[in-house]
Structure formats: structure tokens, C-alpha cells
Amino acid sequence: MIAQSNLAWRHKKAMFFRCFCIGVTAFAVFILGLLIYQVSVLGLPWLDAQFLSSFPSRFPEKAGIKSALLGTLWLVSMTAAIAIPVGVLASVYLEEYARPTRLTEFININIANLAGVPSIVYGMLGLAIFVRFFQLERSLLSGALTMSLLILPVIIIAAKEAIRAVPGSLRQAAFAVGATRWQVIRAHVLPSALPGILTGVILAISRAIGETAPLIMIGALTYVAFVPEGPMDEFTALPIQIFNWTSRPQEEFHELASAGIVVLLLVLLMMNALAVYIRYRGTRAK
Amino acid sequence: MSSQENIILSIDDACISYGGKLAVRNVSLPIYEKKITAIIGPSGCGKSTLLRSLNRMNDFIHGCEQSGRISFRGEDLYDPGTDPVEVRLRIGMVFQRPNPFPKSIYRNVAWGPGINGLDGDLDDRVEKALRQAALWDEVKDRLQDSALTLSGGQQQRLCIARTLAMEPEIILMDEPCSALDPVSTARIEDLLFELKENYTIVIVTHNMQQAARVSQHTAFLENGVLVEYGDTDEVFTNPSNKRTEEYVTGRFG
Image (cartoon, rainbow over all chains, first blue to last red; front, side, top):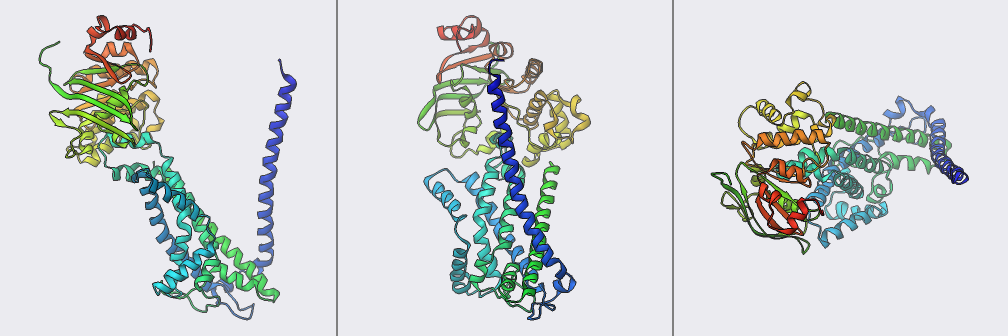
């Protein structure tokens, strides 16, 4: 009653903020939509069984993405197999076991910093350590190890946040019935933190799928006419193949690149769907 | 005092500090077997800290230090050779806020006995614990439902059942009714009377009437110091210390 004019003004401000947020979201969705539209228009006509099952070629109509697609699947599976256990266990250690000393603090800060290091730097590190020092050559294993280094900070940070969000009262309840620390972590902390951990893993793996620079650095090939059969084989990956096609002068290859991007997005989408499904099952099992 | 009273837990000259700040100062206190001992006192007086030291729950608090001796049936709880997990097996705890596991009602009660490999049929053990906690009739048809679907009072009784399923020798309760409504509180107090037959209970409470109703012995703490300890009747009707009298008559705190 006293300050009606003021109230009207506050409602206006609230409305303005709401519209602003809607506008920003719409902008982001619009850009994404534009990208998908453009890529689809160019790429979809090329996207057929022949494209998926052929090796690269200098004739656009014969060129395909088989080696790059399988290379990416190999690379991502191996990276996940290395980075997820290491990352999750490291975050369990940092959150559940490590005492909050200066050293722990130092490690935490540096992990956060590592998440912001440009990927090309990881490529150089991978070249020096895995390719040269450990003599792993330009193999899938070198690539997967390098990618693991790249995404470890992302996984660790997300998993740490998820573990920290598990209420202390839950841990206390478990300890109070005579559980060891491992039993508390295994039965209560990890299941409760699982959705958050998976979100971090999805983000990290998505990043690994899209990275090109470190792979070029460690010498992944741009023209591969065979399918990798083991972790020591040479390989190429989707983003490298796409990059290669876009740098060619012929228009047809640019369209092939678009088709490659569609495939990349589909792979990404399927992996995310898988993680969402696991997360859904995890929360329902409770 | 009634006849034959055994001291099951003896606190001698306990001092507990957090990061150098003393929270409990030189407290000595006996806990009698199969009796209810109430610890009362104003907020921040150290009563929860003292309670948590009795089953080594303070181990998880960084910077918490303890001196003095707490012996359980003659064994030093803080001896380097004592396994804190075994201590918590034998001395259970119910917390201030109901903290059921986000799992089924059955799993909440069965988890402790399961991981510790306690003897006997797990189903029987769960049923017995739930009956003792006066929750069985309300949940027997939905044991597989999530514990989070229960009301606050039911959740707290489930937490008590979870503790009872371990058949501990002592049950520590940290203001178990502070988050509950009067009806749920009354149910839990009734429960305490029954449990007293078989269990030793130490209960921290803000509620003076509750301490007077349920306990046989009462300790009054203020600023980490044990001001008075004695039979509950004594402490409430004829306290020897002026501060105790002021507190139990509600003049402060």
C-alpha cells in the first residue's frame, strides 16, 4: 500500500531481467541452430553408406570417413578407459583421504590451472614423453595418453565437486554403523556423486572427441587408408580428417567436411545419450 | 542410587580442542550400564563434542585434538591399538537430524549388519530392529520404498533402527528430537524407556523436560566445563550448584 509505484518499478526490473535471460539463451540456440543447419545442408547429401564405409580418396565421390570414424572411436574408448579411472580415483583421494595441507592446496590449484592450458601444449608434452621418450611412436596409445592428460583436470575438478556435494551427514551415518572409509566411499559417496561425476566425464570426453591440435602435434596421420587394429597402430581421427578436407581447394571436399562434422556431432550425441542413460539408471536404482 | 550399577564407560579428565580452541575442559564423568545419561547445557557448551568423542566421531574433524582418558569396559578408546571402526561397531550413534541413506528402508537397516558380517538371518535382524524402533507396523508393507519417502519422525526412528540392528553396547544420541514435532518426540521418548532395559544410552538434549523425563543421570555442561553431575532427580530438584539451578529452572540458556 505504501510503495505501490516502487513495486511496479521492481516488477518492471524483474520482467526486464527475465527477457534479457531469454534473449541471451535464444541467441545461443540460434547460433547453434544456424551451424547445424548450414552443416546439414552442405553435408547431408554426401552422408550415405558409401561415405561411412570408404577410406579417404583424392576423388571426392569415392572419399569416405571409415578410417577417421574408427580412429576416433578407438581413441575415445582408450582415452576414457585411461582418464576416467585415474581422474575419479584422484578426486576420491583429494576429497576423502588427503588432509587439507598446503601441499594438497597446491595440488588443487594446479589441477584447476591445468584445465586452462592450451591443448597444443599437451600435444608437445605427448610428443616429447609418449612418442619420443617412451618410443610409443605415432600410435593410438600415444594419442590416447595425450588426450587423457588433456581431459584429466576436467574430470578431476568435476568429480571433486560432485564428491564434495555429498552431505557429511551421510558419511557420518555410515561411519557410525562401523563402516571403513572404503565402505563409506564405495556404498554411499560414489553412488551419490555419480550423476555429477558423469556430467564431468561427458564434458571431458566431448572435448577429447573434438580436439585436433594435440593429435596433429603427436603426428596422427591425415591420410589413412586402413583401419587401426590395435593400440599400437597409426591412426587418424574425425577432426583431423575434417581439417584436412576443409584445407583443400575443391568445393566438393568442403561439403565432405560438412558431412564429417555431422558424423562427429552424431558420435558426440550418442555418447552423451549413453551417459544420460547410465545416470538415469543410477538415480533410479536408489 | 539404585542398586548394582556398573560403569561401562568412564571419562577421565577429557579435554577436546578444535584448532587449539578448547571446547571441553577437564571433564570426568561415569556412564552407567543400562541407564540413560543425559548431557544438558546451553548451545555451544561442548556437549555434542563430548558425545562425539565417545565413539571417535571427532576423528573426522580436522584439527580436533583430545587428551585425557576415555575407557570403555576398561579399554582406552584412544589407545593407538584401538580400532576406531570396532569402537563405532560397539558404540552406535543417532544424529541430530535424521540422516537415512538414500536407499530403501530395508537397505538402511540391513547395510550395517551386512558389511560387518553379523550372524543370523538379515531379514530377521531388520524386522527386529524396526520393531524395537516402533516403526515396523508403519513400514512392513513397503520395505523396498526409499527411506526418503518417510516423514521426519519416521526417518529418525529408522535411524534408530539402523543403530539398533548393530546391537551396540552403547547408543549415543545427539539431540535426536530437535528436528521433530511433539508427537514424534513423544514416540521417541517412549522408545527410550523400552530401550533402557537392554541398552546404555547417552543423550544430549536441549530440552530440559526431556532430560528430566527420560534419564537417570544428568550432567550439566557450561563453556566446556562439567558444572554438575548426579542423579537426574537430584540435579533437577535439588542442584548443588547455583548455575545448574538457574539453567534447569530456565533462567538462562
